[in-house]
Length: 132
Image 1 (tube, one colour):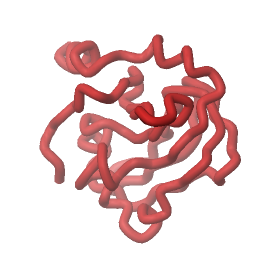
Image 2 (cartoon, rainbow, N blue to C red):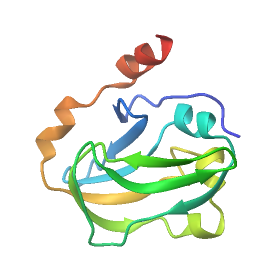
Image 3 (cartoon, rainbow, N blue to C red):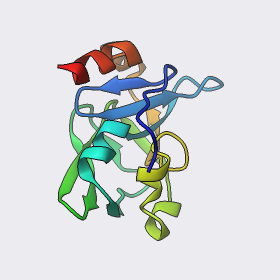
Image 4 (cartoon, rainbow, N blue to C red):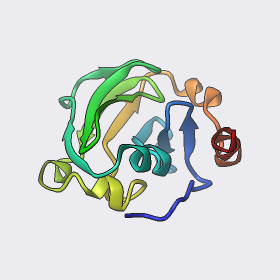
């Protein structure tokens, strides 16, 4: 399992989801769940991804992650259209635990409202919410 970390280059949603804005194409973002979320879930055994072409709405559920403990909704930190799904997770959903910010990414999205990222937290602000 990955060590606790919250990379500075990511943006964070209060529901423990992250977004990585593509430096070469700022209208493209990769989404996933944070170390905190995967740790709270425990061992992830299944990821039910949405289909490519699905439209996401910020703050709405777009997928489910199932662990040995529970099934949890994945909340969209930003709005847009899914352009890619991490197909490797169907074979190895544990990558979400092992590398939540790398190989454990969930979907890639073409943003419909790029200004929404202004409402997300940076790593320092997100870490502060976890400290309580």
